[in-house]
Length: 309
Image 1: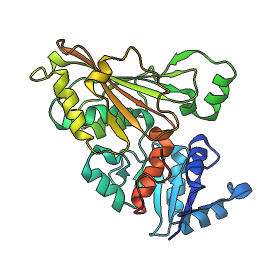
Image 2: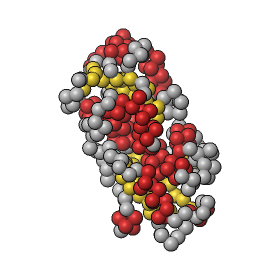
Image 3: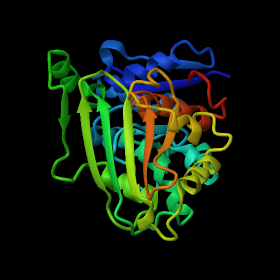
Image 4: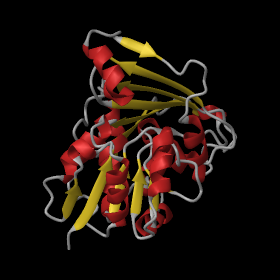
């Protein structure tokens, strides 16, 4: 059986990456509008005739597109931030729990996670569920992404010779904070410190923890063990061994580029009271386009890894 797919916003960075992952597949047929992609009626027809629609649009445009979908059989994946805390939409991070995976598989509406939240939630959500990190704990997350996450304007700026490194979100009101707080199970907003580096893609997301400030002063082994248990058998999320991590002298954000993989590390002194939890991923892969394709596969009952590396 061939499923029809319409990518609304296929000319953007995320849309182009999704199209590249889908167009060679024999089990999918892409609805392509070409020069008619700005034609409202052509878009409306595509939005209502496709088996599944992927929205790669700004928030308000995504909301308008969803309102145009009148066919109750059409499934929608939205890559914007518009619906990430909406309880009527399934949050598209299947590895976070078996229940979340089941909801995605049954859903007509799925909100694709953000790139920064993907790394952060993979690190902290299992620890909050286990009670290792209390829900009201003051959590900090530091992160750096390649400039491709900023869209066409930022890409053009950095490729023309932009800053080597730029901290942003300095008002501490970044739009990802509600998403990260809610889906981590935290009861107080986290402190988010994002930055962009002068390289195209790849991401490191870090959560530093004072283990001796947590209930029971858990060891690095306890934290690592909980993460390992949480992702046992996961196809795209892996936890590096403590031995491998201890032997490392550095970590590059470009290490998983071109893949849908997410790799987690627990750094620290086994005899100390501190840890650095670090997630490595491609902001255009597991952080965006790869995640959308993975959710598409689940929603259509296909092999979860089809079209993904």
